[in-house]
Length: 207
Image (cartoon, rainbow, N blue to C red; front, side, top):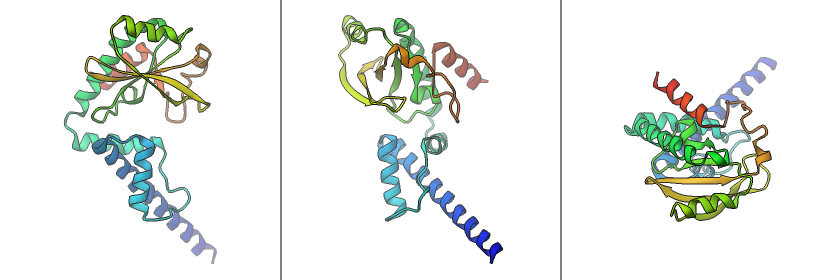
């Protein structure tokens, strides 16, 4: 009975892993082709693949969706590498101008996974967040104000959205104290980096 029990659990784990992979691949397609955000894409993919209630542990995490999205774009999007390079070059240029606000780059430009119309996401750590708005106004840049979940998972952060050099940009505003630990690597590596780190990542990818 014991060996057969082990076999049953192994089969269940294999089935769950296969389901996670299928949901991740489907979510990646929704992100790449439909422009959905990760949370919406995962919900829609789970509904389409699961056709009802899903077993516990069958939903993929962000890293699994990232891997599936990278694979999808590299297979089906001939402009992906060019798009990533353009987004990163834009990030370097804008970060140089925003240097006083301690910018870190995250999201598509940092990960090198950029679906069409993926925004450039910079996290700023200004002493006075209003100064960021004043800077944009002085540059003649129209922007919209929104909020998003704080990257540390507590509360919300203000977001300024606008177009810069035909690239959609999100500036999320954070307290200077939030810099503490922001660059500490997680299980899948650092989730953001400064301008020098992005330039270094670009050189590594080029070789």
